[in-house]
Amino acid sequence: MSQETLNTHKASLLLSAANKSHYPPDDLPEIALAGRSNVGKSSFINTLLGRKNLARTSSKPGKTQLLNFYNIDDKIRFVDVPGYGYAKVSKTERARWGRMIEEYLTSRENLYAVVSLVDLRHDPSADDVQMYQFLKYYEIPVIVVATKADKIPRGKWNKHEAAIKKKLAFEPTDTFIIFSSETRQGYDEAWDAILGRL
Ligand code: GTP
Ligand code: MG
Image (cartoon, rainbow, N blue to C red):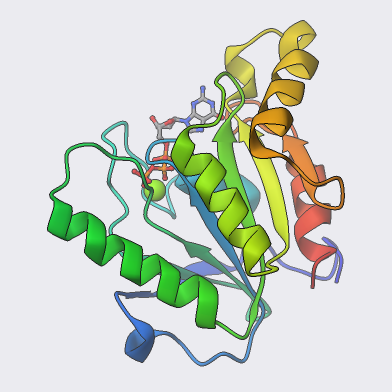
């Protein structure tokens, strides 16, 4: 599939699910978005779909609580996964969250790839490293998107990219994209990487 054959503007929230019994049928390829709370997952979705606020974003972390399935042109789906690493949640909540994500990532037959978002400005957190290693373990293709690139000078991007790759033990068979939802830096690369996995 190419960007030309996909009407990326024809997108809508299909449903929100807490567990398997609520997932839509597994008839379309899905791309899931994972990453720390507030890293910019929902903003990434909005940028790729050319929409301001289809996926709800917030400066308040923990906005996305369920698995949100977005239908794109009846051809593919994006699955916005609640962010991890948000301190202000109870142990019970955290455990529920863990089960919800794990159930989806380990059992979903039509999951084609996970876009794993990290913040280009910072070294990946322990949770970021764990997520990447988890995806490697289950042999789920990963596209690492290092976002908020607009917040650091272009001359420092390479240095930050190298630091992130080192910390993740990034495998060269995966894709690494420097991205910004503010400037749309990396927009074409992100679509190419996603559609290239279908
Ligand atoms: P949760 O739903 O809580 O897991 O967060 P999220 O990962 O969906 O983050 P969200 O997209 O809501 O963005 C969090 C904040 O970061 C918002 O204030 C966004 O405007 C901001 N943000 C996201 N991406 C970028 C970016 O590329 N550049 C800049 N400057 N800000 C960004
Ligand atoms: Mg979100």
